[in-house]
Length: 265
Image (tube, rainbow, N blue to C red; front, side, top):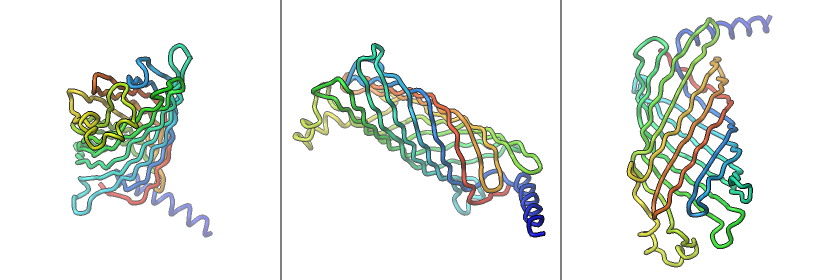
């Protein structure tokens, strides 16, 4: 009897959930696997390419007293890459990640459709170790950027569940980054602080820092969890001290979101 009552309650809650909700506060976890390629002229003029693995963690919620219009998000994304040069004579191990805070205004122009626009403060850091270099085998990326962010979501509902398609993209606007001089060792930078900051600290905008990062996902929404799969694309380019750097990544992801709260339409 108790089991029957539990099943009935789950079915009723699922029907109510699918019919009356559009999104909710959640914790989102995803694993990624794909291909990454990088160029770092501080280490080498060659492109290094190989397998990438990643972990994405996001927490999304809504501000109080905003009529469910303004959302915020804290995110933490990590990547590991084992990358080889074209002649298979050297390797770079890449470990990097982004962490930040984003906020979006949400529109609902039609049933099931949600449009988002906003921005984020993004901190990026990475280390790259090159197996062949002797004098400068190590390179570090440190950046902070103000990002523009847009997105769209379309949701289809059934009696007991919902299916949504979502795309989010970000691009850097202004910020700052660390880039050493060509051939300049990190020990040399340390010895000449703080005057060395004039050479290694750079203002960034469209003239020397460009990129786009996006995520396309399909979400199977249940009352307490959301199961999803998708694809990430990431293309970043920057230039300073007569050196160019870029990262390109294409990966697939699977994950789960724990739904912590329900927001009604």
